[in-house]
Amino acid sequence: MIHIRSASLLDSERIREIHLSAFPAAEREAVAALAVNLLAEQTIPETLAFVAAADAEVVGHIAFSPVSCSGTDKFPGYLLAPLAVQPRFQKQRIGARLVEAGLRHLAGLDVALVFVYGDPQYYGRFGFETGVASEYVPPYPLQYAFGWQAKRLTDVNTLHAAGKLTCVSSLRNPRLW
Ligand SMILES: CC(C)(COP(=O)(O)OP(=O)(O)OC[C@H]1O[C@@H](n2cnc3c(N)ncnc32)[C@H](O)[C@@H]1OP(=O)(O)O)[C@@H](O)C(=O)NCCC(=O)NCCS
Image 1 (cartoon, rainbow, N blue to C red):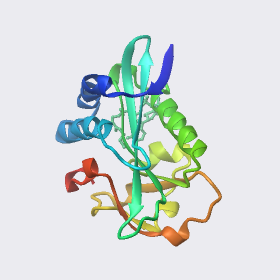
Image 2: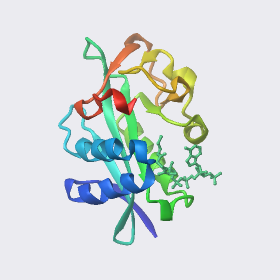
Image 3: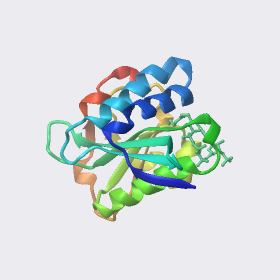
Image 4: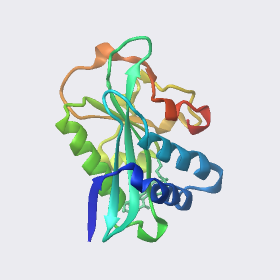
């Protein structure tokens, strides 16, 4: 039975292991460090993380951190990153449940937009679209521009806040983009 709950610093080591096991060798160290570092981010609005627990064992993790428009205090929304499920537990909708739980939580906070940099084949199923993201320039040049997507959670018109985005300090590493 899978249960989704908020992550805490006590989950750090397990979260690190999940990302190390799920991501390819070239990315795993940087993504695992990001996942752990985000747990300690002190931001307003707050950086969020959720884990999926199968009985007592944590088997999946997702984080959402706020992005702002560079040079302003405008806050268009959150960035989803990173997401991973322990390989042995993949293809059981645990990833989907983490994404859906996070989006529900953010919608409850009246967050307007959620950005993601990832495979459109995966994130498209949750309603992420490249068109919605195109008004916003990611914080760093992207290796795969087609992966830059966003999902609108409210009808609030946020276009006045379009422009280049600034991310939280854990994500200020060009190798992650
Ligand atoms: C992506 C990931 C989190 C999905 O977790 P999961 O619990 O297996 O997800 P779900 O069970 O909800 O969905 C599984 C589906 O996603 C597909 N999928 C997984 N990774 C995908 C990718 N990169 N691109 C497209 N589809 C992908 C699977 O093939 C499967 O397809 P199916 O439903 O047609 O069988 C997991 O595969 C993972 O940890 N991958 C390594 C880390 C990673 O790539 N994270 C995302 C970075 S953007």
